[in-house]
Structures are given as C-alpha cells and as structure tokens.
Amino acid sequence: MSAALGYPLLAWQEEVLEAALGERHGGMWLSRRVALSAPRQNGKTQLLVARFLAGALLFGERKIIVSAHQQGTAREAFGKFLEIYDESPALRKRVKKNGIMHALNRESITFTNGAKVEFKARQGATGRGFSCDCLLLDEAQILSERAWASINSTMSARQNPQVWLLGTPPTPEDDGVVFGRMRQSALAGGSSGLTYVEYSASPDDDPALERTRWKANPSWNDHINHEVVQGEYETYDSETFFRERLGVWDDDAGVSVIPKKYWDSCAVDEVPEDWPLAAIGIDMNPERTAITLSVAAWSDDGVHVEILDQDEEETRFDQMLSEDIVDWLWKRCRRRIPIVMDAYTPARSLEPLLKKRKMKVFILGPAELSQACGGFFDAVMRDGTLSHYGQPPLDMSLAGAVKEPFGKGGAWKWNRVSFDIDLTPTMAATCAHFGAVKFARKPVSSNESSSGVEVDVL
Image 1 (tube, rainbow, N blue to C red):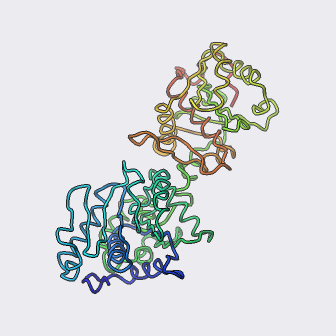
Image 2 (spheres, rainbow, N blue to C red; image 1 turned 120 degrees about the vertical axis):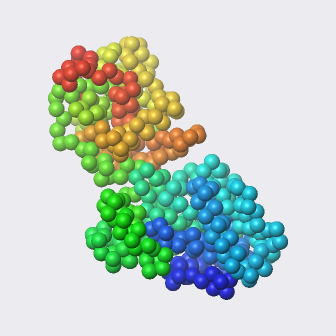
Image 3 (cartoon, helix red, strand yellow; image 1 turned 45 degrees about the horizontal axis):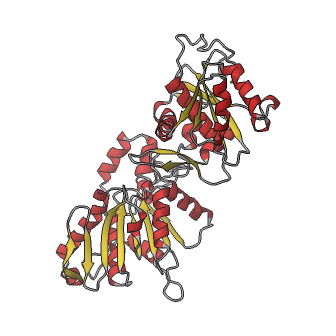
C-alpha cells in the first residue's frame, strides 16, 4: 500500500510490519503488543506512518493515536505524513476535505472513510484520552509505569487493539522500566502476544568497524550519514556510542533505576574507623515483618551508607521490641544524630518513643522524600559522592526498586517492581543519606565525631 501511495518502504521496515501484523482466526491480531528498539535516524518515524496509514485505509481501525513523550516528537510523524500527502495524489483522495487539523497540540487527520489519526503528547496527559484501536508510542524509552498502566486500562475495552512501542535503549536517566521489562520478557521467551524486534551490535563487537555499524543500523546504506557516525565515534564516550549508535542495551537498562555497574562502582572494600556517624534512616515494610536501619557516615568524598547487619544476633531488629530498638538507637545517637524516616512508613510507631527521649527525629513528607530519592540517585549517578559496602540485601533491594512518579514537576519516589522485593534497605539508606546532607552537621575534621558518642556502628 505504501508503494501505491508513492511511499515505498525499506526492506527492514517491511519485515517488521510482516512480523507484527499476523492474524489469528477471526481476524484478531496475533501480537497485541509490538516493540521495536533501534538506533536513531534509521526510519522509525517512516515505519510508524506506514502503520497508521495501513490501519486507517486497510484494517478498518477507526481511531489511531500517535503519541510521544513530548508533542514536538509526536509532531514529527505528522510532518512526515504531510510530506507524503503533498507528493501523493492518491493519498490526497483518501483524506477528507478539510480533514487535516494543524493546530498545535491538536494535530489530527480524518480520512474519507471516517478513520481518524490523532497526535498526542504523553507528558501531562491522562490515560483516558488514549482509548483507540491502534496506539503508536514513540520514545518508548521514556514511558513511565504510571502512564503505561493508565493507557492499558483504557485500551482493554477495545475488541482488537494493537499497541506499538518504538524507541532506543534507555539512558540511565530515562524512565525506561516498561520498555526494559518488555525486552526482558521477549528475550526470556515468556511473553505471549508480543512481537519484539531489536537492531543492535553485540557488546564485544569492534565499534570502529563499518560492519559493526551496519549490523546495528538497518538503514546504514539508505539514511545514515557515515561521516556523522564517525564524528559520533570520535566524540562520544564508548558507553554512549554503543547505546546511541549501536543500539546496545545495558544488562539492567530500563529495569533498575540505578544500573548495577554504576552502583558497583561506588562500592568500597573497607570503611575507615574515623568516618564519623552522620545520620540513621529507618524503614519498615507494610506487612510489618521487616525493619531495616541504615547508617550514614561522613566519608572523605561525601557520604557512606550501610544497612546494619541483620545476621548479627544483637541487631535482629525485626525480632526486637520497640523499646529495645529505641534503646539501641539511644546508645548511638543520643540527642544529636538525626534519625530519619518516611512519613508513611509503619516504622513511625517508634516516633513517640524516640521523641519521648528528645531524640532528633525527622519525618519526610512527599516533597522532602522526593528530594531524598533524587539526591540519592544524583550522588550515585552524577556526583560520585556516595559510597557503600556492597551488601547483598541492599544490592538486591535497589535492583528491584523503580521510580513511582507523583504530583507534578517530575517528582518521584521509590517503589518496588514486585512484592517479592524488600524495599526497606533502599528506603532506609535513602533516608540516612538525606539525613546526613540535610539535617546533620559535618565535623570540622574527619577525625572528629559530630556527636561525641561511639561511632563504630558501621
């Protein structure tokens, strides 16, 4: 059909469509979900336009939505359609008179058969407006769990919907959990109703070789400027070039908010005894079966965090009475070391006992919790000012932690990817770190204790 409209596709684009558009008995889609990961500038937008034209003109889909994280990216598909429309008399005959809406943020196309294509931004939108027969989600590496859940709930009422996710491997800063899980599910072979296509090199390929670049870029000999790619190779760091141009995913990209290699790079083998205690964070799970205490200490480069070893008999906090936990904290904190916890943690049952002894207790409301989570992320991913001891409970907890957006302006907090994850080590460490940078006083000398009490709790 695209060729008939003066819009021929490349071989790889035809192959993706062929893989994605298989039908079961009764004309139902074999694949309700289609995901494509490929480096930029290979023609994903052209493929997206071909899919919505086929849906509107061949498949009888009455409402199709093209969505991207921001309206500017969604408008790129609209612009590509207009290019074809201007050059194709056959396509112009299929579009309703005055059927193209150009108004910013309200772009749409209405065809003579009544089918309609709308172009929407996900940012700031709710899922209610995404009910349609075919949903094409560009920039899938920036698709939050909340947006995905909201969109899926509206699509479930459609008889035969199909959802496409098109994107590139997520960067550490992207909210790529949905895209990453879909990829993992496909690679594990455990997902039904999913077509997953990925164009990428292997991590051990030589990025300097043209055959490596050709392998990862399906439009290498059609759309890609080889000199520009060489410039990328010469100016990007290796990790960025492999991800952006060669389509290589990190092992846990899009699954862990803080990828394992970044977290591991912050680990230290020893903690000097003269790193003074700065703060303690506490968290308890909703079932009240697990409680974790984390300490933060002033290090030479910033803040060191650890969870207290639950294997030691004297620190089995989940088996202690509340008074015993408070006694343990009193011996180490007295009235000077901040004790920090989330406003909604069940561990707040300790708050009256702590305040009765006039200890410094700080409760983080939503705004401060967002600051704490963001500060912990930045200390690992950007600043390199956080260190830890490589403790398996904290490692596993953080590996299963995801961002949960709330409010406006990009605020987020930790949540767990499944109920199998114990989030309390992540929350306790986050609270301890925030307590150090926000509420504690850093000693003048690293040899001094900020409290005058024992600091060998690490």
